[in-house]
Length: 152
Image 1 (tube, helix red, strand yellow):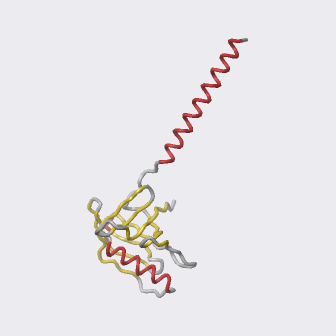
Image 2: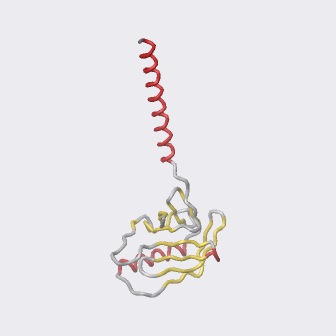
């Protein structure tokens, strides 16, 4: 009887230990998320110059995708459609020939559009950490922040 109790105690302790180490591994795995790729990722604009970007009712959210084919930039400013090209070399980035459609929008959307386009024009560097992208200026100061959105 004592042997059986000792065996049950040993098995119980073993199961508790295994459960604890499994939980520790799960929390370590969820604590670190791999960095999203800069290219071919849908980047939703979340802040400009540190201020949050608000999406108005019937307008598309401001975002961009850097398509690998022909280094093509595509997206939306929160008001108009955005297109152009880009060049990436290591942590450096430049946006070229950026153009938009010319639809009129409410003043708040136009203000977001102007600030977004200015950030693309001034951007010289980028940094991705997890699902967050920052475009930086010459002084490594953040111009705009984005989050990766998975479409499917």
